[in-house]
Image 1 (cartoon, rainbow, N blue to C red):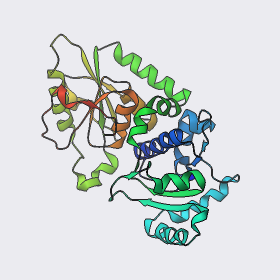
Image 2 (image 1 turned 135 degrees about the vertical axis):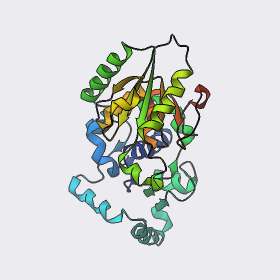
Image 3 (image 1 turned 90 degrees about the horizontal axis):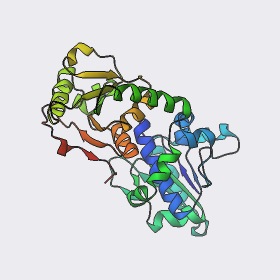
Amino acid sequence: MVIVTKRTGQLGNRLFLFAHFVANAAEHRYALANPSFRAYAPYFEATSTQDFGGLPIRLQVFRRARFDYVFQLVQHSRIFRVLQKAVQLLPRRLAAAALLADEDGPDFDLNQPEYLTPARQGLVLAHGWMFRDKTHLRRHAPLIRQLFAPVAVHRRAVEQLIGLCRQQCAVLVGVHMRRGDYATFAHGAFYYDNATYAARMREVQAQFPATTRVAFLLCSNEAFDARDFAGLVLHRATGHFVEDLYALAACDYVLGPPSSYSMWASFYGGVPLCHLHHPDQRLTLNDFQVFLDT
């Protein structure tokens, strides 16, 4: 059995981390529990119903959910390292491991024996963001998309929004205008102003013939003034973090700063994505590629 212990970042990070573990568990058929995803469980089909298509996957570790709060105690890596040392003292026949894969380290391949042997035969406590199984994530992508479809109320809201947008355009470009925490993340390097987004959006629009109706769906975690985007056909997303994510996944292209949020939209919807790594970055349609976690 494998238990994912650490809450890694926000929604995009946790979706990708869970997806890597689910893909690996589906391939190698071991039990998986992910209490770290509990905060987002109500928003997705599999996690809200605890139905993972017959796979031995669940969120709750213990029968009584309140006992899962023990994992609150090991959120910090330094505390988890103490647990890791304790597990190393157990007899080898118990097949137990406490594995640490922090974001400042290399990828941890979930297909290596160091992980798979205790996962199948005993217990693994997995702590960190860098656990990966890229091969099986691609192989089991249809299953991942099915399990992490939004629940009906949010799915219908997305369908309604996208339907309205597409009545007015032939090409719909989703723009992830991330603000909020990006004011301080990486010292604000990706906290772009409206003028930057508007300039890059106009560059994208210029890639299409003048007769092509291009519209933009803006998803932002802060309010913005639509007047700053004059001359562009603009739609506002609902503002709900799940609906905005899956609305981006339903666009034809996605543009935004580096973020696992827009990467998930690209992966889930098979939508070409371009990340803005600096405000003056010049864009062509060749810069947009579907993200497959390569």
